[in-house]
Image (cartoon, rainbow, N blue to C red):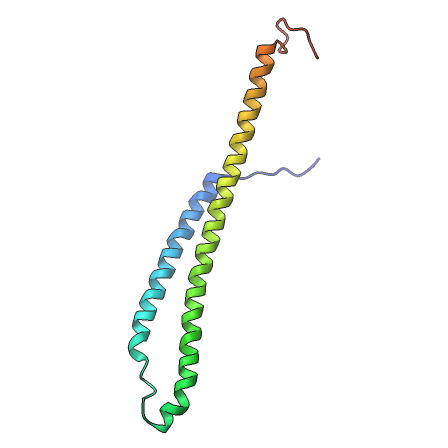
Length: 122
């Protein structure tokens, strides 16, 4: 006997709403982080030997950190969007199949294949 496949779209949807909340929190944290980061841009200094040496590395690390934060937020949003899209596809497939089964059952009853007066099998 084959394995049974089961999915609960409503449960996945409720979990996807948690992902949406995480996405909002991630965006908020990123915005707050970038706002807090802005005033520190001149910390290595501007006109000293130290600033000339430290500034390129500091700018590189600053940009890497910003890119990482933005990428994390984009990843969470992407996962959420894909999850919601998959749930919609599952529901559409389920609903379409249920409609086709009901339509087939309706035809059987209308055409007399239910054993109450039709001509039997065709």
